[in-house]
Amino acid sequence: MELGGKSPLIIFDDADLDTAADIAMMANFYSSGQVCTNGTRVFVPEKLKQAFEAKIIERVSRIRVGSPLEMDTNFGPLVSFPHLEKVLSYIELVKLKVQNYFVVVNVYSLVHWRKGLMWRQRYLPIVLMI
Image 1 (cartoon, rainbow, N blue to C red):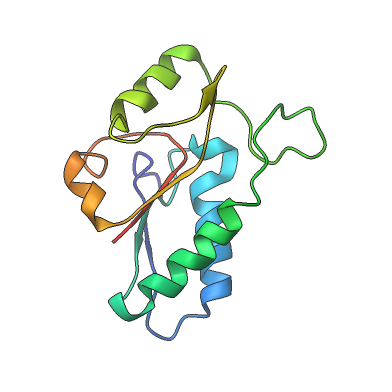
Image 2: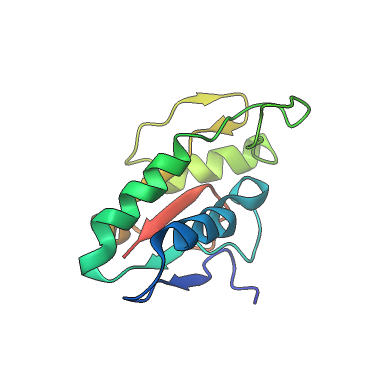
């Protein structure tokens, strides 16, 4: 379903967290987070949140940002400089490492939702966990 890059993912109490984390990674970071079907909002039961977040962060650490022409790259650039500016405006509360149109992947918890990331249509490499 196309939801403007804000599709929800719901993790249930009995979920296999490794499988859920793999699915969340694909849902959030396919095509560098720039697809209208991205599952950027991940709803996680409070009792699983810490373990799930650790699994996501571990997987994010394996992302290799760079040219899609390089064999070891698994995360390419944003589509344009204007889009980079838009992405940076959405996440100005976070200091990003930026080179050309590349940004580092970001993972946020509930506290950051109040900053407006949840409510705007966006196509960016961010996981928002509630």
